[in-house]
Image 1: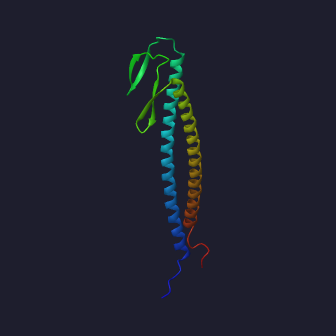
Image 2 (image 1 turned 45 degrees about the vertical axis):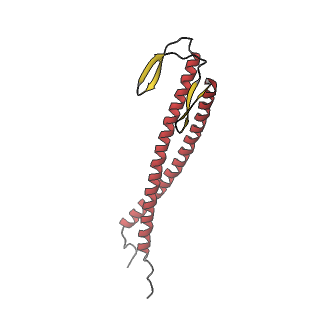
Image 3 (image 1 turned 180 degrees about the vertical axis):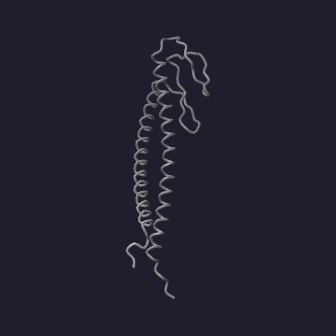
Length: 155
């Protein structure tokens, strides 16, 4: 018993289903990258704010009273001596004490890496978006051709 070759219509339907699955996968990847981009953006804002705060402390007059954030929109009035070391998170819950200048340098390095990751993520998102647009146009064209009439050109 010889197996029958798939009809052109069946082949086209299989390709459409494959394209729809690919389109869904691309959209899921794009959503994941968008979430990653938002996390990176928030991290960048946090690092820039920390760096600006350190610079503000360095510019402040001795014995200047400041509001020190504790988190959760909670602050305490106090002051910081310019010579005081700074505690900085290194990841995995590890916090180390460093000189202020070293912390400022580390924050600047982190900002450079975050900016690079943001640019790379933007580029990957643009590539995925382009793929989504091309695949969507192709599926739209196939749908229009199908709705124009499957019997067009047949006897």
